[in-house]
Image (cartoon, rainbow, N blue to C red; front, side):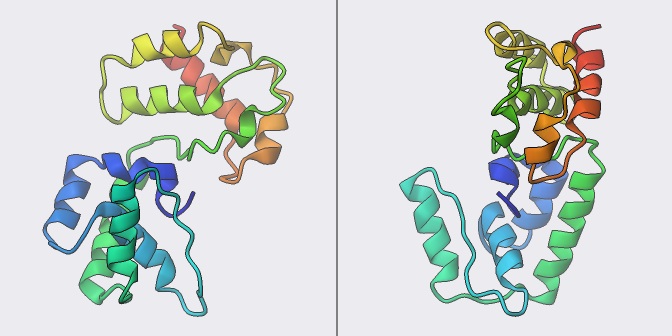
Length: 171
């Protein structure tokens, strides 16, 4: 799910998009995958794809692979800084955390709702939080058992983050 954040790089903030767009060199995902493939001793980079268009994009920049040049690497660093300063929850929506949750909380959906509200100022996020908790647990229902954190590949402090989600949506 890394380095493209489980597809999260598709919806970059406008200032981050501008940095990549100014390079005129490829899709946002292409920079992330090429970044990972540019490290020494990397032989294979796996990329999840959800459409033929995504597959064609991946083939286009990996067929005659070129490591990131200095300008592209600087752009990746700038975009990374922008993303880190957004205070978003860096969940990749792998859903490993949901298996075995005794309260059936769909954690990735709630984190996506939070990110939509905080990062993208999406006024629909309150509605979606309601939809995502209609037949599943709310953030406030977490019993802090920790099962979710043991399976999180991002090593997120899920229990603490659910408290933040709760205070954002369940005031």
